Figure 1: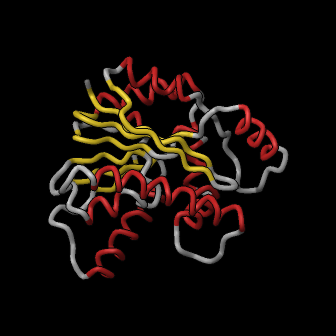
Figure 2: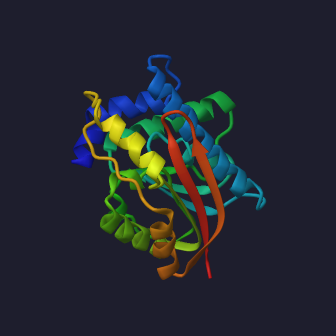
Figure 3: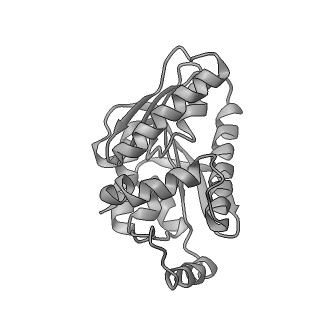
Length: 226
């Protein structure tokens, strides 16, 4: 269901949200700004550790490349994937436009593929998965974290909509006004559950951030292998 959604009406909705077009409503614009803040926080974390030249990064659930592209332009060796072939194709297009605008291509171009998270293979210094867990119920999210952890040699960065009394109420209110392009369920996750999943795979959370706008709320965790 998720795959079909993001290849059809979901693609059109989220391409606009993640893009630069002015053809967005107030809610979509707010979500765009919130997601961009989450991406900027991840980039800041990674920049603080020094050069990203040839650092291998897996961006699982890359969307239109909002994280993968700036990482590649910083010199990281990026392998990015999305369950939607339409999204992965748009990410490739956005990367090519970024290279054209900058006039300089990185030595290692990013690789964009249409893959669900369970199908991703390989080993990477860093694995990032932003704003994807919202599509997974907790039992599926545990399996997702387990697989992502198996891909990460050193670091795993994930973001999710936190399950708190306040956000649970906001989510319920939002469900009372379904839009034509909202065709998938949204799941909130307790931070303690996500952290427990990471710890079971040998990772310790070392950084935390929260991004909250009017319609976007996302908890960001960085965990390292111990």
